[in-house]
Length: 442
Image 1: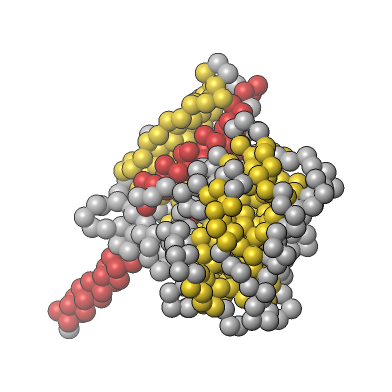
Image 2: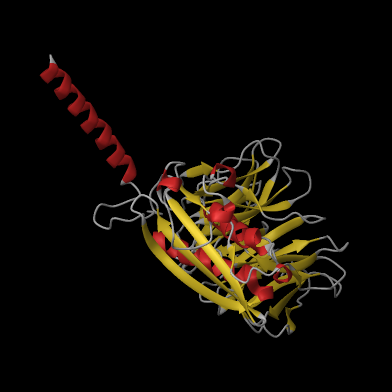
């Protein structure tokens, strides 16, 4: 009896241990002995990370002690938006705040017992007019430091410094850069007019770029993030402008009669496609950066708008009503061969083609506009939003792993970020007015 009991217990323990290993090593390979996130996996378990308040080394009240919570708050938001991490509630921490006096003196059992897999410790101190921030990331299971990083900069740039640290963490655990140092352009009517604004990827540090006191539409940031094209009605009709973001110099590059709208960048940033109606009908054209027409892509009685290039630049997706209702079409630029991609929904619009060769677009089947992704090769569809108001203006992140879009699910239109599968939807704008037409750049 005793032998059978022991044997049964041994087998049970081995089974439990095997289950533990199979779960644990989906994110911790045996060979590396450290946490690693496979961002190409169809289902990524979120890693629980504990982030206590940062230590103020100066310990001077007049040196903005509020940063002890503000700095880890920025990095917590970055990690949450990435969708790879679950930041733990500080109320679950067993360690008293006053006992967190060192980045190195860690009692790991205090963190493992609450379920933390990673522990991020941070400290900051002032050097003249600058702030130096240091973080150390620990693998709680192994009780080892897996990242130690310091950054220094102006105090006013503390958010950018934290975004840099967040990116270092994501790169360490995935092997790829994250989105924390990217930027957005968008349209807001907070001033009473539709003007273009620019901000960090998380909606902070908003800067107004245009002061046209009219209607500005469809901003598109260049692939290198240095230029912006958009349409403005400030000079009697929709004309196309290009702005150098560093110098602020803005030039009108297309003021042809009729429409000059919906410009999108070729992948190398040396030309663009847009809709012109100089021949009477709205058709697609390619144009160089001086505004010179290179070629006419469509010549049909229907309306052709909203072009977006494939990753290689050899194809273009766009919206046309040639079948009756607006639908998404694709064209091979070399031979002008066209193919209809959407056959469901009564209104399909706003395609955006990612570097990972997926198309996101807007479709209206019932009472609301929703977002879908489409594989341009096999036509496979995936619905990303549902029963959440109207969802419009989708745009891919530079790495093709996230989507920025506008939604009125909470009343006014605001900007939201989600990953490519539609999960982890998070609102990033909270000001007055409506936020629409986002564009994403490095």
